[in-house]
Image (cartoon, rainbow, N blue to C red; front, side):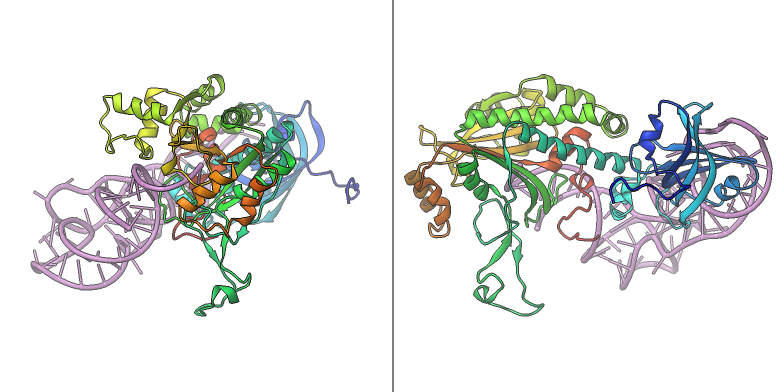
Length: 464
RNA sequence: UCCCCAGUAGCUCAGUUGGCAGAGCAAGUGGCUGUUAACCACUGGGUCCGCGGUUCGAGUCCGUGCUGGGGAGCCA
C-alpha cells in the first residue's frame, strides 16, 4: 500500500500542521478534521478545523451563496468534515494562511448534546468525559507532548547503549516489596479456586516493577531499560498516584550509586529540555494557562546541577530549620511529604538527590554501605512533584543479600533465580524507577496525575 | 484508609435571616460582507446529588449515603 497514488482527480490529504507552515499558496488542498467553531457571517462563514496534528486550527473560509457556504452554515462544533480548496494568504490577523473552500463535505455530524463547548471546562468535568477530552486544546497538547517524551526516553537510552527490554506484566512473585498487588485469576465469579488449580498453578499478580527481571538482563547485556505499565493496588487517593501507570526502569552493570545518580539527573534534564525544544507550542499552552511558573521551573531544572545530599544531611537540615513540621524529622524515619517539599522548595530551591538512606526503611535488594546502617539508595526530588525517581545500587554480594532476605522474613526459595545472578559472575550494578506520568506533570505543570494519562485507573474508577 | 471542602440549567457559578429558582457562557431562532472562544437581539432550558428528619414552609437547618476535589499516609 505504501506510496500508492491517490485516486485520480482527488488530492492527497494534508495535515493542518503542514499547511500552517506552508511556504506559499497551494492549489488542490484536501484537509480532514473536526470543526472547532463556525462563525457565520452574511453570505460567508469561517470554520476552524483541527485534525490533531498541532495545537492551532486551520481557518477555512466558505464564500458565495451556494456550495461551500450552504454546507458550512449547517455544520456544528464537533462534527468531522473534509474540505478541499486552495491555500491562500490570510488577510485577517491570527494566521498566515487560510483555506478557501471549494468543496465541504460533512463526514460525521455532531448533535447539540456534544458536551464540549467553545469555552474552558474544568479538569474535573473533563475527567467524566475522558473519551472526548482529547478533542480539547489542552489534552491534545498533553498527549502530543506525552508521545514526544516517550520517544525522547528511547532516544536517550539508545544514545547511551542501553538495550530496551520488555519484562513480564504477569508475575508470580508475591513479595516484590513495592506495595499492594492486583491478583490475577481465571476463576469464574463466585468460584473459589485454590491457587494451585488456577491458570498458572500458583498465585499470579500484575507486576509492581520490572526491576528484578531487568537486573538479570543488565547482568548480561550490560545496560538495559524497561518502559511499560506498572500496577499498584494501594488504596491511594492523591493527585500523584494511579493504580496503573508507566515506569521507566534503567539498570546498568558495573555502575555504582554515583553513576546511577548521574544517569538519573541527566535523564530528567534531557526530558525537560526535550519538551521545550520539540513541543514549544504545546508547552506554551501549559505555561500560559496551567502553570505560570512553568518556564521558570523548567529553566531551573535544565540550567542547574541537582543538589546532592545524604539522608543524614537532609535530616540535620530539617532539624535545624525554623519551620514547624507536623512530623518531627528524625534519623531512621522516612522523609514525609512536608520534609521533601521543604528540602526542594525552600532549602535548596531546585531538584535534590537524597542518598544513603537507613537500611531499615528500604527494601532487601539495596546495597549495604560500609557503615552497616545505611544502604546505597537515592531519590530524585523535584519541587512541587516530589519523588520522581527512586533507585539504588543493588546488593551484589550473595552472603549479604541472603542475610537481608532472611532478616526481612522473605522466602529464599522464591528468589532462587534472583540469587543465582549473585552466585554466577556477580557484578556491581544499579538502577532506578522513574514515573513517566510524574515527568509529564513536571514538564506541563499539570497538578493531577489523572490528567496526564489517557484513561486513568484509580480506586473506584475503571470507566472507559 | 483518615482529615477538610463541595454537589443548584449542557458548562462555570450566585442564591442574604428558612419565605415565588437566578446570572454569564453554551444551545435554538433572527440579524450582520473578514471573523478570531466573532458580535447584536429574542427564545427555550431545573429530580437544587439520593434517602430520611425538623418546620406552616427547606436549595438553605439536622442525620445518612453516594460522587467529586484538596490534604495526609503509601509510593513512581
